[in-house]
Image 1: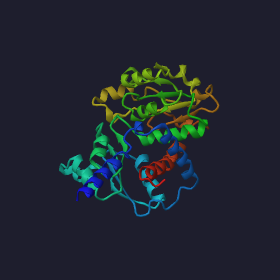
Image 2: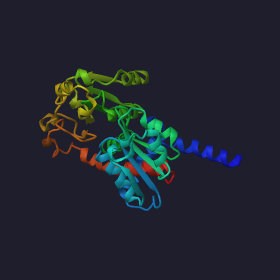
Image 3: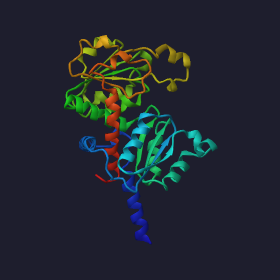
Image 4: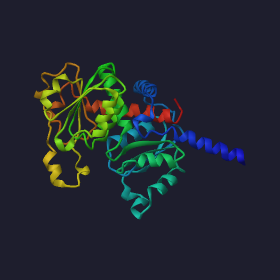
Length: 316
């Protein structure tokens, strides 16, 4: 009995370490392994690796690309998906706690993919679950799988992740995608331009993070002054749902709009990324420009998430 309990405890600890809550849960070599695996899945996305596996998707916040690309990734690999797309359709609407939801779903699935509005919720879930937990976004905190697909998109289009200039535009205060991407790209010799209105500037904690690493960054409210130096322009939506005061949202919602004519002086190989959905921040006239890459970026999410799932389950 003692050996059984001990082995179960060891198994529990090992499985918990295989969750993905923050991009910092992965070493640089593990990131590169996932990106290499994503390239393999891009060549051959339909396989039977997940036959008999069940992935639970718990989305307490709305999602289109993240949820559907996870479901597509699982289905293409022969697995099954269970879960909910709205907290109101689950027992959360009856008052069930996150603890009880995770512990229950843990019994039904081999992996949990969760999006939740509260920062730290994914880390909490990973500490009580005995199956791997993937953070699909926890409030304004982290979105590591988006970061990995962003890295894959950057690597595909630039040929390298080193010595690039990344221009981040829009909601840098609440944008979890830019926070995760900053932390990831800081592993290479990256320089950053942060373009945002005063109300949505990059939080000090992330700038301090770059300071401690000795990496260069500049802050400005003028997109035109930095756009021509960028290798990647990372546009973001000003998120209405993060504002408690509607008037504050109205003041900044259209702070930056990218138009096709603004790209005339940019680098030939520059690409525009966006985690989507967009509202007004990229005018539709940009879509036909070869430098627009956001829809291909969304497709890359399927291959990257296939790689993440198989890595965390120890199948690749």
